[in-house]
Amino acid sequence: MSNFALMFLLSYALCIYGTFFKDITWGICLYMMQYWLNAQTRWWYGALPDVRWSFTISICILMAYIIKAGKYSNNRLSDVPQTKWFALNLMASIIINSWAVWPEMHSKFLDAYIKLLIFIFLTYKTIDTPQKFDAVMLTNMAGGFYVAHETRSKGRNQDGRVEGTGPVDAGGDGNNCAGSLITLMPMILYFVVKSHLEKAKLWKRLLLLLVLAFVGQSIVLINSRGAFIGLVLSCTYMGSYVFFNKKVTMKQRAQLIGVVMLGICAFLALADDTFWERMNSISEESESDTGGGGRKLFWKIAANEVVRDYPMGVGGWGFAYLSPHYVPAEFMPRNASMRAEHSLYFQTLVERGYWASPIVAGLILCNFLFMRKIKKHLFKKGDFSAYFQGLALESGFIAFLIAAAFLNRLNCEILYWQPMFFACFGNIYLIKGYTKLGEKKK
Image (tube, rainbow, N blue to C red; front, top):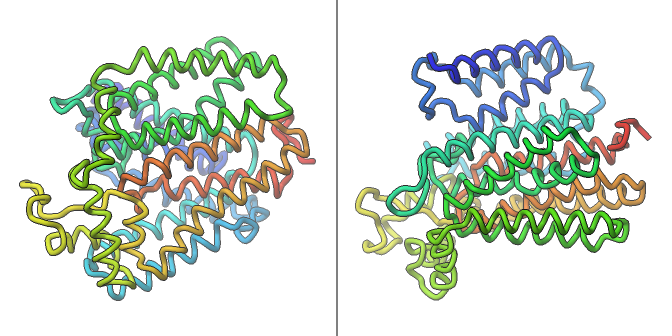
């Protein structure tokens, strides 16, 4: 057994112990770390027993919650807007299950979504202080760092891409991996700046900069155009929001400019000719229906033909199931008999139909409306540290949503984790009234 496998087992045992005898946050963080580790696909996994790690962790979290339910009874699910949209999305999925064109696959996704909802609701009940929320954010960053390290170790293949990496539901696809990693970048930037402003110990600042460098380099190596666009636009949104804030002093603006310049210099140092060649192909693809393996063609088929024939939705992975009947033969790969929509939004339209697609849109939109309310409250209270953390959370979700315009990610856990984070953040700082400075209720 490798040292890494042994460390994994010891960490697993320690977190399970912490879940039952300290706080359920230990189990939440362990589940998230397992999502990023994707242990079963790693080189060090061979000597470990064949265990359903994520499922086992979930059972332990549920058992610990039942034992300690009274401790978390003040966190009401009805207090946050995400709950009703999660429930409506579940109801829509159950209804569509009765006519899904690929019932086995839709049932698989429905089962996974129900399990995910249980985890999301337990997380909301558990993560109810600033310290716990920061622990979850740092766990995600640590998981992203590991994926970035694995990406760097694999290196690019002959096509200039990195495959066979990423979290559990990335399927080894580089684009999916990059789409997940970019959600972390604004939050990492927040912690980097926060550690500098608070004059944290040097080793903490250097560690955060190392995480930022590794995750940034992995995104460059993967060469995902959608992730690159999402990252640039989300960081621009975050940076401009901070820079033009009236409460930010000139000294802080100068520090922000310094961090941005350092980031740009680091990015330019990491980006090689292969990366820029692929980014330059964005404009070329926009002029062709055949770019990205026929992505624009698949969008047209999804919006004009499949939805016309199945206005009530085809169910999970229905477009792929029907693709041999809709996609021209020259766009079907030799080693596969199915094609996907290559877009979260067209996937939603096809799988959920006209009637249920607005539910997914509502689940996404409610987070930004909720965050607007939270930020207004934090701004009025003068808690700018929490204010900018909320902005980082918002920017990470924006990055994912932009990248997902080119990816099939309707069944990705990150898509549902983000609303969960928004709900926890709102519960802590808006409903419970915590402040980042001192972590005391108002």
